[in-house]
Length: 523
Figure 1 (cartoon, rainbow, N blue to C red):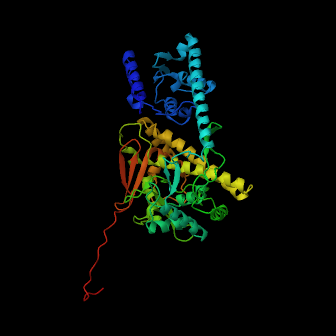
Figure 2 (tube, rainbow, N blue to C red; figure 1 turned 90 degrees about the vertical axis):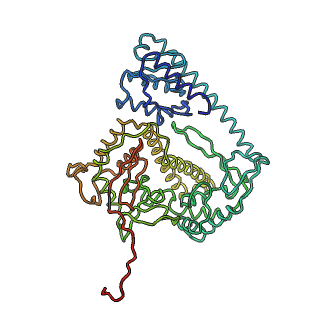
């Protein structure tokens, strides 16, 4: 986008369509902006995957044309993978056009002139070799940087309690922030839990590091496991393992940062953490999903996520509560009966989908949910690297080994979820939205009664006969967020493709009035 590539390719597509008398479908344009085709990632989870799905689903009709600048935009992968992708496209009755030379590749043209297939293979072989050479050179540059890390900082991305004097290449400690980190370690050694630490800092209005609005337990966990507090830097390098890009931790560099915590205190905290449950997995993580609005429900007052809590002894009744209010960071602590919200959604599903808005422009930018998930993945990868370092120091501690397996499982789950979200957010044609609406209705059927959700009344059973996990996935594909407006007693559904719907789930709140009694009147 900083150069001329985007404009050039768009102009080439328009001119080609005009010259051939073709209708250029501007509503179904797939753009993998800035993504390399070296390992065909765009064909597995990007916009090219979305195009292939659209072909398979019949959204892109047989006989259509796919316009690309050159074959290296389709694939720079190894030749067998590149050839397979090339053949998959043309065998789907799609004519592949390279705009740089106006070549058209189809089953008919390749069959009639096999030389075209040879030309395409040579073109993709050259593209792969160019990318492989660049990759080797880039790895060599980073290897050299890592070898000189103590002489010159490897990167400008540094812990929040430090600043970098770029002219001198030296780190300086921000004493105010360093004292906050020290306090967190001291509170941990006193047996204070991570949630309680976050709650205390929020109540005291202690400034948050970075762009965060308030302290979260997850950030406390990250600080407690960060070896940078004792001056240790763990560099990573990216490697492809079984086709997946993986951040592989390298040998730690001692004394890279100025330490703010003693090694003794750090080791004591790590010992405490290694004997407790993994902070990255909630106590219900291995159970069935109970909240179909997970990651979607929003507070009407502060727009923070609303989370599920239980009130009462035993299992208790589930309620939705603003996460900001729950952590003591402000907002109104208002409990909303979860069953009431879920029941209203199920009963009103026909009204919601029947009045589905037309929506705005397609190609919606990656939303806050995807950005937050990517941030969580980055933090988890860092934490995993630290655990791998810890197990080497502890000589194969079983507790740390178990933790590593748990974190690896969590990381894979988050990456799979991110892959789904990226694909879903970029395939929102009106036809695909309708397909997902139909699938949602099918998922919400009750097998025992063979009745659809349109006939369900009252509060759902404690164990409703529908797949809540799948329902949540479909809801996240269809909606960017759902505001639980308890002040008006309504749910507001914001569609990913644009527009919104509103339904009622409860009576609006009555304003509280102070009643003055006449002392002479009878009660």
